[in-house]
Image 1 (cartoon, helix red, strand yellow):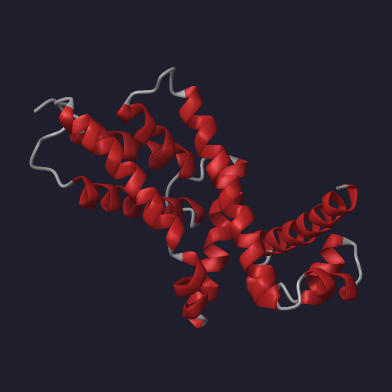
Image 2 (tube, rainbow, N blue to C red):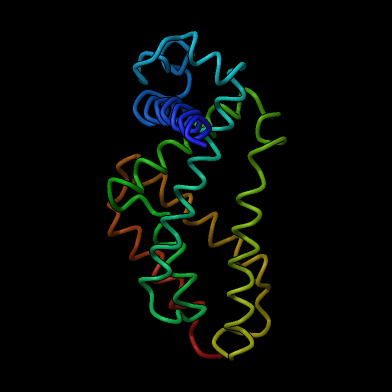
Length: 201
């Protein structure tokens, strides 16, 4: 068990080194040699744990997704006990916006992956598309619950609304990273749209 834990710690160390490079320099700079240097290990060790660059990229992407999931769960817990459907939707969408160092790091790193996908779309097709679909489905479930409670108009399509909210938040995140607006301004825009959505029918 100790050896297995040590192997997992090594894989984590190497994958997180790649994520740091992706955050600060972009994935075009994340060669196996650069990752080894960032992790403070030999190139041979990186190649031992990750025989291909794609394997390393995908392992790191899964870890990034787990970090975002943990952040969402933390924000949902802070939204109340038990949180309302609106509280859950607000927490999830707000925690994605790059308003603090952790969310800015996560957003920048996902952006690095999106840039990579533009030149290698098969990576997204095979491994990267599932998380957004799951998140849209989760949000649609919360919107449907609010609809059943009479908090959202019955003619709203929960799936389309969830997809639109996520697209808006992703666009707002890009505008924050690009310096077009502050995180607080982006959060105010999100709150405005949620207030309109949850206005009593």
